[in-house]
Image 1 (cartoon, rainbow, N blue to C red):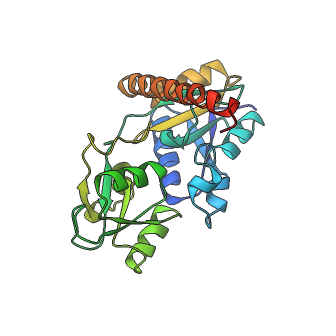
Image 2 (cartoon, rainbow, N blue to C red):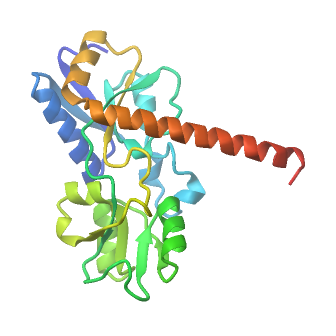
Length: 253
């Protein structure tokens, strides 16, 4: 695929995903590269009637974008880094991570509530957030909440829940700062690996000169170091869980 200085950026079609793609487009424009955003629907965007825990969380928002990279339909794909698997498909690589937004989870509501409000009903689709809420705040009732950010906020305002638990970064980027009631403490609500930053993924066959220009326009060295540490930690944890489960499988438990 010839670039001719036109970079094809693959993105999901939600408003937040398009904000992210536009942000990368602006970064490229700052160094003289023009771009075109190519919208690609993912499995996670299509299946909204089941919880993430039932359809699998990693890869459901990235697989179709990665397929487009491998088919040379786009030059780069823009992801929320937290949506990515620790192991990429052969032939693909993350070439840059952007400057990071605050990594906190945030309680978002149209009501005057806090995380300690009695009988609070909180909507989230994250297995991690559900587990942390149940552990630290057992008084909270959790309901599954899928859909893009605007859809979830509309469901909340229509009475499906009192509040949402979201990434601060997404709510802030979509100008819902007025609905953020509190940032949850990092010592309790450990964020997902990569939360708050964007990952730029490309084929290993991407033209080297273009690759270097994209890195120069988008990469942030501090985030790069953070992501190296976080993804290595997650990879080791996953390996440990596999090793722990092996004896159990051999015993037929």
